[in-house]
Amino acid sequence: MTSARRCALCYGFDGDLTRKKGQIAHIDQDRTNADESNLVYLCLEHHDEYDSRTSQVKGISEAEVRTYKTRLLDAIAASEHWHSPRQESVAGAKADAIRGHDERLFREANDLMPEGDLLHLVDQLQSDDSYFMSQAHRLDKFRSFFSETGNQFIDPDVSGKLQALLESLDSLLLFLATHFFVFPESQNYPEDLRLCMYPRLNVDRDGDGTSESMQRYDNFQAQLDIAAKAVRNAYKEYRLVVKHYLYL
Ligand SMILES: [Zn+2]
Image (cartoon, rainbow, N blue to C red; front, side, top):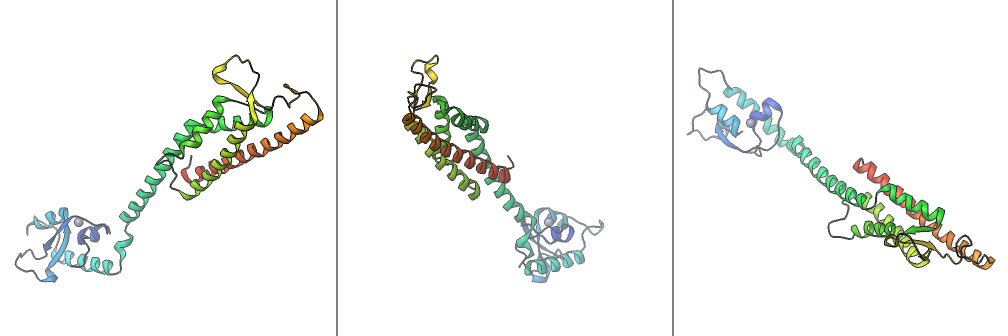
């Protein structure tokens, strides 16, 4: 038998080339006639149907079965069963599972640091040179979430854009940790402290207003601007590839 577990009647009636649980049936229903030409592989359902027919009931004829068997063997010989809808749907199911995994990952990370909050932080850094401790914590959680086991995107495009984003976040967080200080020193909500970039160089804060201080401040401001822009751009690209691939 070369029917590769495909049922001759499933194929004959429906063009169904998917693999089925089944049995070898005797076309003439004579169990002693085991000649190859008298054997056909049928799925369990069609096997029952074919076996239970009586001469009084107009069921599936021997001639039909032989015709479908021949057609099926031709299709198998032409490897048509390798491209059956079932196998395409298996590949589709696998792609869906990967997409489901990546989608869950995106959503979990997005809960830690939603797009709006991240962009708001970047705006605030660029316009006010300040942030709150809680914002940096969330950004850091978002970043470390992706270093946990199993929290890696499977899709290579999303994964690549995420890597670029994480690198830009590393730089920004390092900058924030190095060049920002609690300001003002006494705050109304000490549980969420506000930090500012070099308040003693900033004439609007504690700065002395000398040109040297202002020059140094401008220099740091330019560095902050570069780090913030890098995050904004990397996030935009990450978000775009997620949208394209996960439709989110
Ligand atoms: Zn069948």
